[in-house]
Image (cartoon, rainbow, N blue to C red):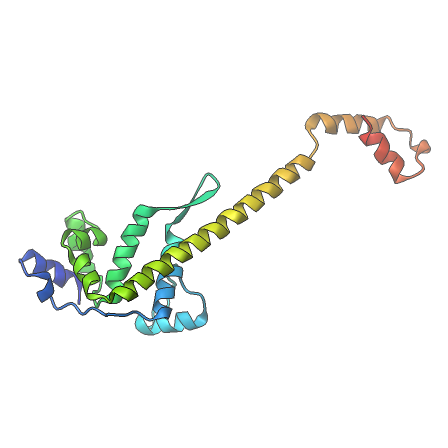
Length: 205
């Protein structure tokens, strides 16, 4: 059902339950995984392609979209998370289609799709028609995937920063480099017996 039809009917005063929106009680685990975490495999891509009539544009998943890097630390943008959660539930559990006319109507109202869903209480109606256990399962998987992704990204960042510090600590200062070069210039190579002799001479304070 096109978004434009829904907007027009609601504007005309039609009650939500009379709109004729089809709402699925359950969503299979493959769909949940794609929506939450993005496409993991070619199998996911094939399944998504069938549903999108051959359109194989990759979907990053909610988790990958809402995690932001701030000052070398990864956090969740909860405002974006709320927007995406609301929108993806509505689009994947129902037969609502985002058509150009519908998006234009929202733009004229200075509204996002999620704002429209909340304002009209359409989102609450949709949630009420979905099997409660299935929706709880979706939310739990989303929370677990977010936690796992954040831990992974932040632990990797900490490791990289530690390595950077260690590498920087190994680089001699400009003063030390100049001192080493001066020593090398004044070193009598005829006295050099081994590489160790040169190393000891240069690094000697």
